[in-house]
Amino acid sequence: MNNPVTPRGLICSLALVPSSENRSVYRSLESLIARLQPAVAGLFLDPMFWCPDANCCGPASSSLLEEAIALAPPDLPLWIRITGTSAEQTVHICSQLENVCRRLKYRGPLAWVDTPLFYHSNRGLPEYYQSLLRDTEFNLIVDNDPQLIRKIGDTTKRKNIRTAVLKKLVQEPRLIALIHRGDLRRGINYQKAVRGRSDFLVYDGGESNFLKRPSASGVISVGANLLPYDWRTITLASLNLEDDHLGQAASFRHLWESGQRVRTLQKHYKQSPASIIPAVLAAWGLISGKTKGLAPEEERAKERILEHLPEP
Image 1 (cartoon, rainbow, N blue to C red):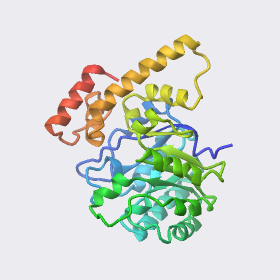
Image 2: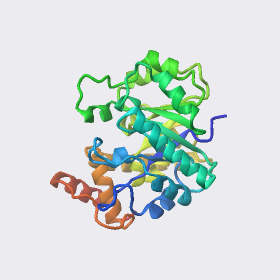
Image 3: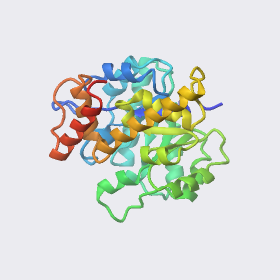
Image 4: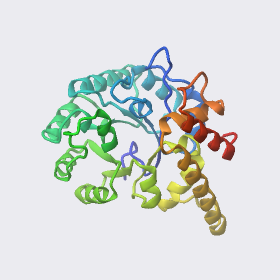
């Protein structure tokens, strides 16, 4: 049986819109979580993705975790990014969030998510994680995200976890999953590297890759903020976990319609999802207050999405 914090299925990267006055305060999580929670297998709290500049965005805050714990159903898995700009800051973030869980006596399904190559090299990574995990009761999910590494602008940095390093990482039983974003061939090599761990899951971090060649574990989706039930339909079908109550003909028709909607919207937001998706949610009234201003092409993309879906 899988660890309940790493279910097979749809994990939504929750749209986080920071307040202009305080980057650690986020808007309208209550409405968004209430809308998403019946459709998703888990929620990923990832301020680094939703921040326009990964180098200057605020890390995951204690208040964000507190609010998510208060608003989400107690059995819904929560993933939260602990990645800082250095190993020391990452350990500090993890410690601060761990203190929140202790204070709230939280024992629900929660895992930390980290993109280690943002601040650490492949060398010494297994030993570093052994040290980090000694001081926390929650398990760890590793995020392989070459695009995030490119945001740093350091061309000398290795942008992917080496397969040989991953083989060593999975010897740590509390490292429970990998999110892979990028090259499909590398993803296949990662699958081979972890096959000795039957409980270890490899999730698609890229929607396009999942739609082309679904992993056996699930997908981390930003588009699920807009179309949670369509993404659920596609993910369940891709993992052979379809809802049993639909007849075969109705199921195929429903899947085709969901796929059409998902691909149409993805075409419009994929160039700048962190800006366009919150703007659409604000237009629907699911996010209150003013969102970040859009560039002209982003504004056009938002309007096209609203033409297809004028309301949630």
